[in-house]
Length: 344
Image 1 (cartoon, rainbow, N blue to C red):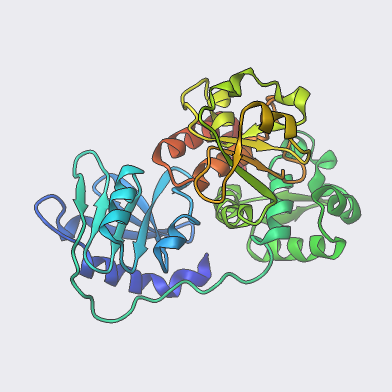
Image 2: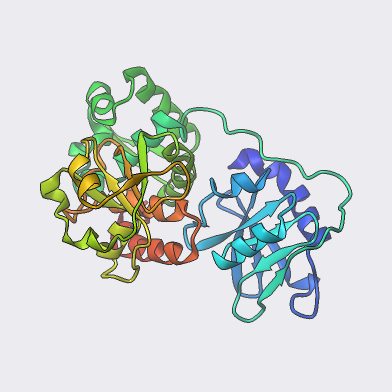
């Protein structure tokens, strides 16, 4: 966002100062630019969106990619264990102690265990203001971007229905709709064309929405379980059983098995007692293999009757921070979202 521009020069100075230059990657090969209000680092022909994280715990709240560009995490300090975890999940990083992982084919760089100090603190992003990418905004934007009438029949689109109807459908307060529309206009996401409203800069809106959804998702009503096996997932009939697949299981379906799910995500507002008992699922407060999560308004149904809308699957995958999931997310974007998102 534009409010972050004032920090970008500090980030550039810091990355340049702590980066472990060598014959693999030289200083002159780091090229910075601001694109769509993001700081982008290009190394040779490969681009990364730079995101500042205050601690290693914040890394998991930042998607693995924004659009087609992977994230490069700029952190204070990563332990050798965390650095190895970042490497195995294919997430690029640079920390203030001179450690780094840059996964590009022609210049693979991995440095961990260094403890070189850097002069002066690096400035953080200020907390975002407004509601647009908080709970009510996340719910409204998801409804608008997933609306099949958004371009096909603008007059029938949710965007152009009454405030009361839109508030009911998005499950937010009536007053919030007007506030969110005003914020969308101020941020150049919404214009009025005659008597109809239109969404613009949708790719930027989507990227910001994914970031907001990643944090919002953690606060949804959610149950997590462990299971000795998840091979049973393909035998279920979600549309008949009152749930829809999301995350990796939905991605497997929507990408014609490009991804083999290691975890299952079920979206439903109904209790799934029979499924839990039948497959010997055990409640977990730590690592999990099955999650049951409350769906967002309007996103339970998508083009495939067994999956939530591809918009939600795309966000689920990026929220994991896993490189393979990011590849699957890109395929879903290309096949299910690009036409809508890049038309305005």
